[in-house]
Amino acid sequence: MPESTNALKQVIAELDERLNRLWRHGSHMLVGWTTAGDGIAVLFAPFEGLMDILEVEPGWLVAPHRMTPEDMKRAAETLGVRPTKLPLGPALDEYPGLAGLVETLMCRYGVARSQHRAGVLFDIVGFDSKSALEQVLLIKNLSYSINVAHSRISEAGYDIDLGRANTASGIMIWNRRNGLAADIHLFYLMILTLADNTLKRQGKEEAYIPRLRTVFHIGPVYEFHQPQGLAPGAFNLIFGGLVASLRHISALARPDQILATQFRRPIESSPGSMQRRRSADTAQFIALAQREIDGLGDVVLEGEKVSALKCYLTGRSIGGGAFNILQYRTADSLGQEHLLFNLKLNIHRPSADPLYIGMQHTDLEDFAIETIVYDSSQPEA
Image: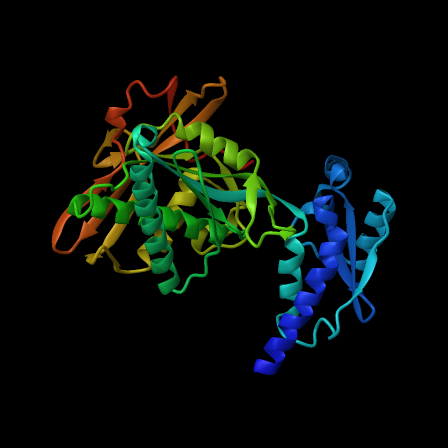
């Protein structure tokens, strides 16, 4: 096994070197790759043609980047560029996992578009008014809570690939993977992060525990690997509607508030009755996520056992112990309107009173241009 591992590393290192030459210091981008005889063929095009590529065939820039030979030929003819054949050494199916390693490497040299990707923005209240050292401590503590949440999810047997970037006043996190399950896991990570952060503030063990505004959104992104030195970096950056929405909506959020946008996310497969649906809106997605959270059992945060985490979208009492769900129509500084949900989180502990995170709907009388009662019978898009 060590010999095969070393052989794979050598194959990938040599392929990386060849791709780097075709990348030409970042002036060209990978459109796709395919098998070709005893090696592979790759198609690179000038980066300046990115907009033209998207107009001709957006599907060429959707991960995975592997194409059929027929699609590669059509793309090459359409773009007026020639594929380059590269030796691979072993056949693609000679080593288990080799095709996956090649695809992972290819992603660094291209741009990938995704229509549905989950992201969370944790914005620290009053960050700009703090000294540089205080800002370091606030970011450090927020990063720690994110790391704890990531660790707990991994311990539960879920594999989550997390992207992370500092913003002007906080941290944005997102999935590096597509899929409903990945988005649910990121939502759960947000819940655990907020729970850990709140428990730290409750214990008052440290002076610089951040107070947060939090936004969850699912939207379109473009992924790009920023160069590090003379090669693409290992970690991706994201741009597009997801990032813009998180930024604009976080500016609307109140201190301690948790907001979720109105979105509709396709369902590839899911348990129970939702398996019959083609997509889930925000309320249905959160209900599905809550079922996942309920199935994970107890979790330990800040040395304390948490027996249950309950998240829900707020609304008014309609009698009999039932509540509706309210949507809030708001406008950002650019005049763009957003339809949002207010989310609350309850932390239940066996040996202490529950902790409540988020804002009540009664605290949001002047929050929105218009308040709408959510209708769960809305037709799918």
